[in-house]
Length: 358
Image 1 (cartoon, rainbow, N blue to C red):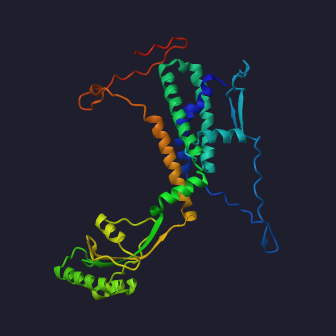
Image 2: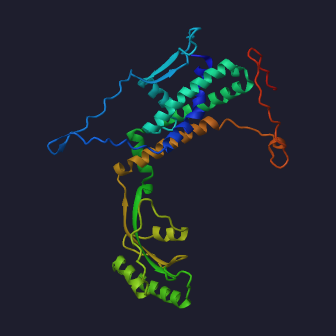
């Protein structure tokens, strides 16, 4: 394969993501409807046999007109070369480029296979034109190689830390048991205004709602059913809207202002907060139960958190000793003039690349 084509994986890293993205966005074309009725035996339709799987050594991409490495086309047939990728080779290439571990659908794979031939053709043409002698090519390959190394290192960390040991999981759970507490909370909402007419802010309505909230809070503290009390609130205030659900979600965990969070944290199961004055109205919160999520149910979350912490620690260790100093006179957006634009040019084949200034 020509020299430029040997560098193709580095360049593909820049190109493969948009190629796959474009293919993913293309609408799927429904299969053509056959005009023939399905074959039947009696009243039962014949089952459709599953498609025959493609063998690992079967060709799946054949590119005509580009020569493999070390092969030259016959003088009288310059387009006679062929590059063949088997299923195993094609899937290995996609796997190497799949830095985000994405499950690509068939349209995305087909789009990449089609564009792969175009990339090879342009790479071959670029080599013949001598673009490898262009200083920009060497710069591009340098940064491409660095980016591929960086992404490959990140991927290696994900693979290395993907499966924490059972001892690590158990220790993390024990050290962070409070994180896996699950509190079921109910809320009684007493609106300050009619939800169907929020623009009508009537002082007498808010005064009535405030007093009602105080009374409802005392009854909730004595153990009356929270859902029934919520319905009574809307009935008493003459509201036609549907009362809100009283049970708050446990996943994701609801978030509260700091003062309300503190009030809830002090409650035991069955207890209620004071009337909390919020922008939405007067709210009363009741802790229905407090439980700890068992280790087995928390396992997936623990694995993710341990894995991410180990990855973050490794990345920090790799980058903490590397710093950069920037010339503020050059990079200051207010004062710096833009650097001169390098005109597009080609260095003739065989020319020596100029040495960058130190």
